[in-house]
Length: 168
Image (cartoon, rainbow, N blue to C red; front, side, top):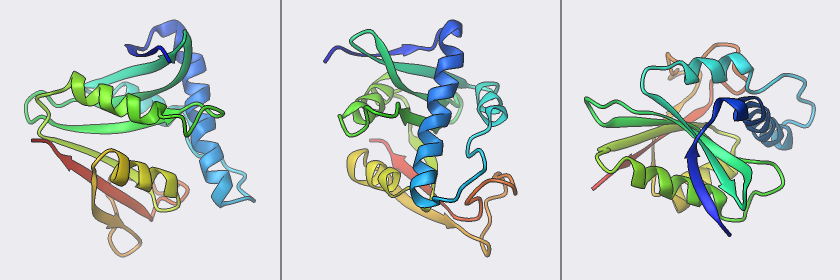
């Protein structure tokens, strides 16, 4: 497998967004079979892409884009955020997500803490972040302990885990 993590080119952005949305949508549909809302609107992706410090990567295997990640890097504090990490539908469970994460860690060796969130129903993500990437669950958002940054209309928006990985 010829794996590369590369900066996203503007010509790849439409396919990247479509693949990212599909990966998130299919994950939610597995949990909520009667789901008829869009899980990850394009506006949410665009907001992340426009964030100060946002960097977008595509994962390429044998010349084909198979996933990617968007990170937000805070140069001053080195408390960085993984906003999105996805593997394209049809190629999950082949080690690509792990390769993406390992490559990101190597790209940002000065990072003190990585942070990310995932919905409570995304059991694969919870397993991945804790058991594969070394994150720890540090907070559980729910109706009695809301995340002030989560939009009110987000599906499962009241129930999220926040993860941290303290780097050595």
